[in-house]
Length: 156
Image (cartoon, rainbow, N blue to C red):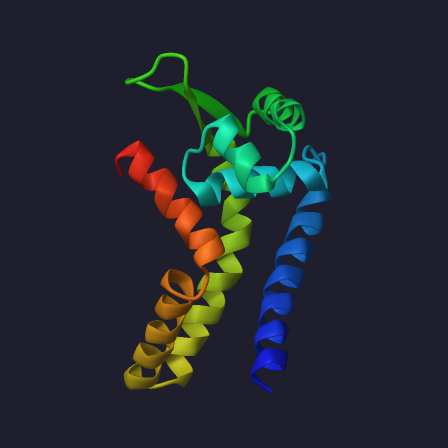
């Protein structure tokens, strides 16, 4: 039952996001490929990775990732920021153009959380918060550890 419900919620968030993305294509040119959408989402989630770190996380070739990053830069969704410590190293950072797109993704989350706070008492929301915190910080080490190692390298 838990697995079915969790998958159902996850799928509905994804479906709403995809619907919003395609709805937006009516008003503008579809400037990102599905692979580029995934790539820029990962760059944002990892918090300013280098191309090497992004390649490592995505488990792909450096040349493939360099090509994707180059396209995202040309389209204005990410930029490279030179490291102050090592001038040979560059961090990837989403641009304002990305955050306009990203807003579409977070709108539905905000809507659902608003509905949640109207429907459930504070005590139950606190329990859900505790469960989600544990899931994020303890039960997903494959992703959490990678993100934490990046943050410690970057001194965040």
